[in-house]
Image: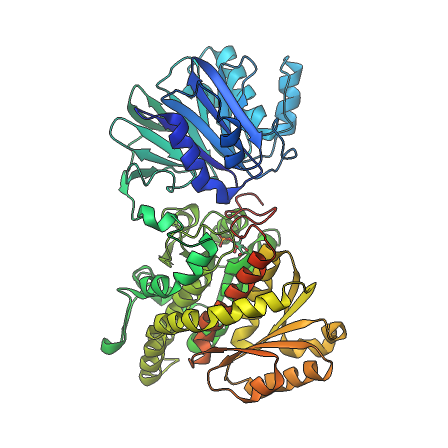
Length: 613
Ligand code: F6R
């Protein structure tokens, strides 16, 4: 939540920062702002999107500068308005700050600073940070980087900050604790950003900062020190990201592009890991911990939102193939209980962004109790993969649309691979079953491609038909119960239509009272072991005049007779069916939202990386 970007070098900072903010806008879009050293230290900020800021500066003639900082906000403290927008000045206006995160003790710090004569313009916690830095700098008569370092010892909470100061037009000082920050290292230029997307078009050399580190860029040199003032040698990595991956590439929305990218992202998630012809399946990150996984008494899966839904699918997968009991927990609940976890437990943390605050906190808690933590993440170099003992990336490529799509299918694919590897090693599945399953897994990208080709138009038609519905129900059983939850979440978040997912058999215990001729009910009903049962559930809805849309296996005639619309997906082993059945539901939510004129990629109130709890 909140995106920050900063630049110093030979280019026009304004353009680099505006472009960068547009790339980071998925992290928040309540307001945007920029500060430049152009004669003085000038801050320009505006409620609304980056495009609104840009439009407001169209006739501003003095944006010439080679150094600047910028911010796109997801509001936490203080409503979204021009005043609460970042950057924030220090009291003497000689410095300005951008901040992503939350300062938990800002109220007491603010009170203390007020008693020392400071006055504040905004309601934000971030403004307190720069006033604190200013106070320390004046009181201790120290350098800016020293003041930042000392301020870090007083501030409680999460932050990635960058400070710009009038005193040196070659200097940016940044720090991180709990919120992501990447340094881009170019030829005589430096970039700082919440993730690598604003950087990749200029340089592929990056340094991912660790918590409690302070970065000083001054006079063309980069220095990193710890909060204890120890020097760190920057570890420069090469980005495995292309510019085309973070552009829309002809699609109207990132979400649609990402839905259509799934055949590729799924191939990428399996590349070098599965070879069905050779009966080969390996996940590098699993090798060291395979014995621990095999001997695990229990697996606890933590995640949020869509990642939690992928965890629910994994529960079925691990219990079926590896015969290990699984519990799936919302990270936000897990972290505030006193969960019973010990060194015989394996915790799997699932996260697309790798930055979700609750998931990170759940990891730290489980680690403190001695569990081995395995991460299943998408964003390379993000905080969760670095906090875990080991893990496997899903290699879905950047996911920019706020609604998660290709990450879900990638997560389920990687978790399926894990379950099969452990099952094979434990002997809980036979060699022939293993061979059959990896052949099935390998067939998925082609099948997803087929679904995209054959269902998109039909789903668009269905969306038009149902777009004015006030409520939707999504029902599934077994492996497809989590898909019902995921389908409902997708619809809610981008179309703002109320939707609920349920296990189909639970209908009779209450929700069936909602059914009337206005209620669209989406059944996820492929030919699997609960097929006959779900046909009965469909009958029950039909008898009460609900409007039935069903995702079925190609060739199904029985459900077609009962439903107003059926959407076909190819035959696949039921364990992997969520990777297929979710695709038409992603398309359905997309087309409903588009036909309602909603902002698909940036739905209201949401942000992609939830770095606050
Ligand atoms: C839904 C969605 C969110 C995320 C959740 C977890 O489309 O995007 O529900 O799934 O915020 O995020 P990650 O996976 O980044 O931890």
